[in-house]
Length: 209
Image 1 (tube, rainbow, N blue to C red):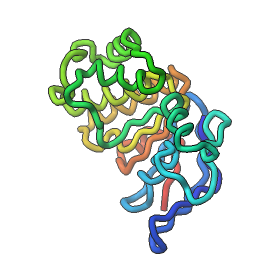
Image 2 (cartoon, rainbow, N blue to C red):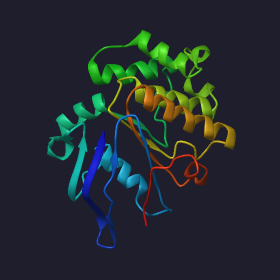
Image 3 (cartoon, rainbow, N blue to C red):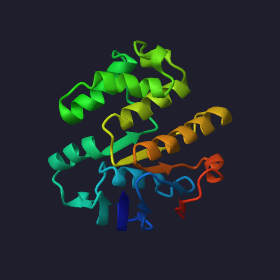
């Protein structure tokens, strides 16, 4: 599970964020909404340990990640946090399969090839294993990002605007997929979005204002 307590962050004296406390148990989904400039992506980066808050705690699986050094935080993130970011950050010279395997290798030093294949097959991407990311549709690339985020069976998956570039049909498919997989892997899923379509899809919501 993931929870936060009294998180604050500022880029400068005129941009100060005081975030509401969050609690999302394993296998459940929390939707964080809010207009542009309300700090949604900033909060997600704090939850993922990509930014350090000025004050407060981020607790994942009973561990306060703010107590870690940068090196220990990187190691913890690789094993416990899956990220689905707006920019996919694929290695374009690598195949789809190699991109997913890379996430496993970076976290554990092992190339979990069979596990990556099974996960991609589960996401209807069996025929795309050996293609380059640039050869996939936007929806397929999004599913590869989900596979990469889940390969290490993290305690938490953080998704930043996972449906913003998708049409209605694919947006709801991705939302359904994320929720189903979070339940299957017993992962706490936090989705940060301004996509109004998702507000009707998930009941556990926090609005940043």
